[in-house]
Image (tube, rainbow, N blue to C red; front, top):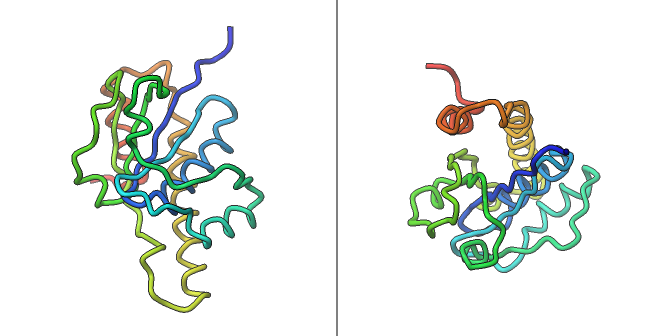
Length: 166
């Protein structure tokens, strides 16, 4: 019998950059153990072109990526999430839909590269930095032995991934 596949939803306000990068990276790194999705409370309507460029330049497929509402994942028939992770401070403070199955939740705040007003090079550098930060957190997340940890222990660990010890 194979390992269980965990569903993860990454949330951000616009669902155009950080949450999309997290979705793509977890699907790539997760090797079938995880199925990642992304959505936003106020979707931008398109994935940021710098995010798409960065993903392609790092060998990731961008086929089928789109900016979508979190309501898609709160509807009957939507995949039941095991984890819901906000990746921007705005979405973390918003009233989220009620997720079926009581998934574990966490907030991983990353700077919004789409909000940077700067040169093309400055924008690309910030997108690359945020991409690396997301990748680092996801690698730690993937090392957690999900099947051997208690729910509250996993919840605490995913909230604190990448944070400096107190």
